[in-house]
Image (cartoon, rainbow, N blue to C red; front, side, top):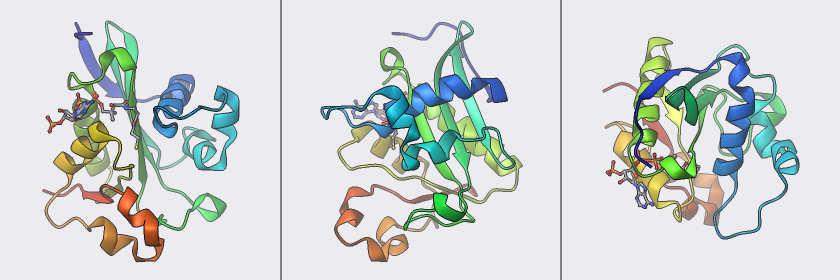
Length: 176
Ligand SMILES: CC(C)(COP(=O)(O)OP(=O)(O)OC[C@H]1O[C@@H](n2cnc3c(N)ncnc32)[C@H](O)[C@@H]1OP(=O)(O)O)[C@@H](O)C(=O)NCCC(=O)NCCS
C-alpha cells in the first residue's frame, strides 16, 4: 500500500496498545507458529519492551497514514531482571515494526531516522539493534543506520557462541 499522508510523530502514553501490536509483529518469526497475542506479550523477552510504558527514558515514534498508525519504533533501557546476556544497561534497545500492508515502502526508514533524532536530542549516543539474519528487511534497515565507529556484533557479544551468527548488527552510534 502506498502511504498517502504519512506523518511521524513522537509516541505517547496512549500509544501502548499499538506498540504492543507492533511488538507482536517484531517478536514473532514469519513461517513459525505464533503464540496467542496475550501469551506473546507476557513472555519476559517481550513484556520488558512495554510494561510501564512510558517510563523515564522511554523514547518512541509512531508513523501515521491519514491519522491511522501504521508503524512504530521505540527504545528503552533495561534494568535488573529485564537485562538479557547481550544487553548493556547503558544502551537502550530498539523495537520496531510496520503494518504488513505498509512494509517495503520506506516507513521503517522514516521511523528509524526520526527515532535516532529524538534519541540524539535526549543525549543518547548508541542504540542496540538486534535481529535474526533471516530478517532481510531489518538487516538492511539496521545496517544502513549503523554509523562509523559503532561496535560490531561479534565484538559486542563474545559470549554468545552460536547465537552470534544470528545477530545482524548490534549498536548504531547516533553520532555521525
Ligand atoms: C523490519 C521492518 C520494520 C522494516 O520496515 P519497512 O517499512 O518494511 O522498511 P523500509 O521500506 O524502510 O526498508 C528498509 C530497508 O529494507 C529493505 N527491505 C524492505 N523490505 C524488504 C524485504 N522484504 N526484503 C529485503 N529487503 C527489504 C529496503 O529495501 C530498505 O533497504 P535500503 O535502505 O537498503 O533500500 C518491517 O519489515 C517490519 O515491520 N517487519 C516485521 C517486524 C520486524 O521484523 N521488526 C524487527 C524485528 S528485530
